[in-house]
Length: 264
Ligand SMILES: O=C(O)CCC(=O)C(=O)O
Ligand SMILES: [Fe+2]
Figure 1: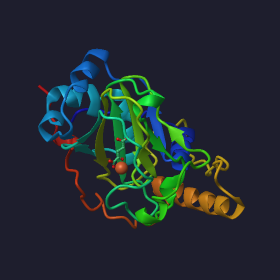
Figure 2 (figure 1 turned 90 degrees about the vertical axis):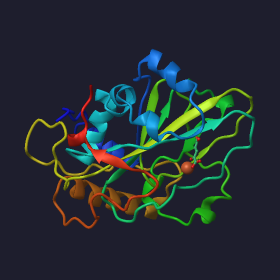
Figure 3 (figure 1 turned 135 degrees about the vertical axis):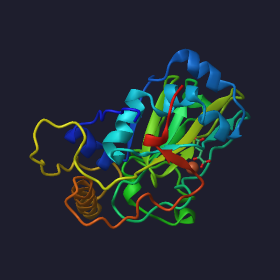
Figure 4 (figure 1 turned 60 degrees about the horizontal axis):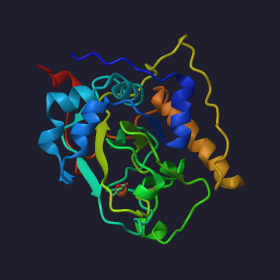
């Protein structure tokens, strides 16, 4: 089987639980970024199933290392992707979470945003709200929100991959120019029961460390965040009953287990 080593340690897994995202800046090879810059918008099924895309992006050791850490061994590798390509200036999208965002506290699905080209503020970066992945809400209920304290614009260098827990609130930010701004979105899924098999120095499972409040979080909600984080940590460490179905309900994405991938 194509070997993928986990890259995150306990503390980094706890950070991910708290923030709902991790960004790997400038990890994809610059020549390959240039190839991806010019592809058309929309579905990219054939393109992402090539050995080149797998080798350079989907199974890149740093990208796949995060997936291996958070979704376990033999995870489901995407066979589909969507290129969110914007050219004309626009006012930006409204805050939303995507598709059939799952209930529950397990981590079974990572949605990734790959930027082949640098994204500056005037290019209409994706905006995310760190920590919002725990708040499953009606899309329409958040669509009218304007700026939210703590929101983050993903102004990133070329070759960056942002990896999010599906369900994080996000949107494409306002775009001021007519330059191409691409984001290739794809999802990995869990395929094995959770256990603490990321990078660790001892078999002793540390207790969950709550990483504090996000700027928009008030006191009571902070207790809830702490509690939900604790549940997710216990779940990931294999300490609780598994309530999610594995892999989760298939949405618009498809994939194949890592064990079935052969690169030429
Ligand atoms: O392109 C982006 O930055 C975000 C697009 C998006 O979230 C969507 O269309 O669902
Ligand atoms: Fe979206």
